[in-house]
Image 1 (cartoon, one colour):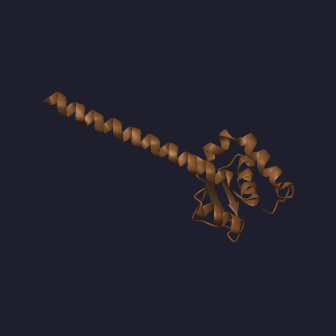
Image 2 (cartoon, one colour; image 1 turned 60 degrees about the horizontal axis):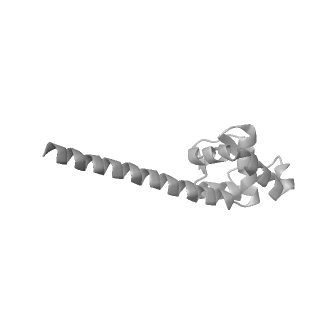
Image 3 (cartoon, helix red, strand yellow; image 1 turned 90 degrees about the vertical axis):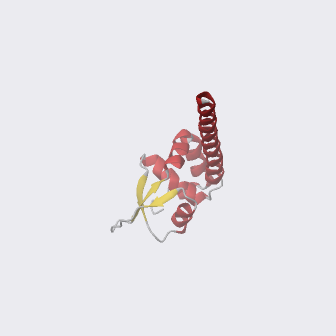
Length: 122
């Protein structure tokens, strides 16, 4: 009887781990699709994070692209502000994806609109 209970618990545990893994894969695919579908200005914002090597940077609160990245779950607003702007941090999963694909993402961000890549105000 003990073996049957143990075996059922093992099956439940393994099925939970498989479900968690599949959920991570699904979320990762959705994130990849979201990042690849960003508009050029949004890509430049994330490229600035990559170039500086910081997950958190200050951005103007009234930029539409920042609000869009927050809405998409790629950036998260940190509840504080200063005269330099509002700090936003890149979601950890998004940051890992960007780090893994850094070269191609930076090329895409600068190639999609070279004038934006040089714009220090964005």
